[in-house]
Image (cartoon, rainbow, N blue to C red; front, side):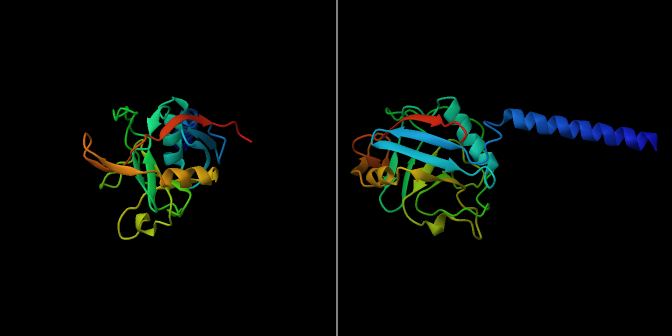
Length: 198
C-alpha cells in the first residue's frame, strides 16, 4: 500500500514538473489569443492567434516572432484569389534558419477561409516549420479530409485591406529561384511583434 502511494506521488511530481517545463517553454503561455503585429512594406496587419485550437502551431509561430526571425523577410509567393505566402526568405532569397518541424494541427476545426493565417508545409503532413500564408479566398481544398490539410492557427483582425493590396501586386517567374508567382517588386515583412496581452 505504501509503495503504491509512493509511486503515485512520484508520478504526480513528474507530471507537475513536465507541465511546468512545457509552460516555461511556451511563449506568453497565459495569453490564449495572442495578437501579433506584422509591419509590411505595404501597411500593417494584426493577427489574432488561437492557442486553444492550435497550441503547437501558435507557439512555433511566436517563437519565430519573439526571436526576430520574421523581421526583414519577404512574401515570396503571391497568388491572387488564393494565398500570400512568406516567412522563409530574406530579400535576397536566402533561406532563413529553420527550427524543428511541427505536428500538423489541421484537424483542429479551423478552416482555410479568407483572412486566416495557416502554416505552409511540404507534401508530407508534419513538415510545417516557419513559412506561413494568408488565405485570400475560401480555400476549402486546403482543409483536411481524406488527406492532411494545412493548419489554420489564427485570423486577421486589422489590416484586411493591406492583405488585399498585397494579393494584387504584379508577379512573374523568378529565373534564379525557378519559382512562379514571385512579386516583381519585393513585398517585405519588416517587423513582427508580439503585442501585450489585453
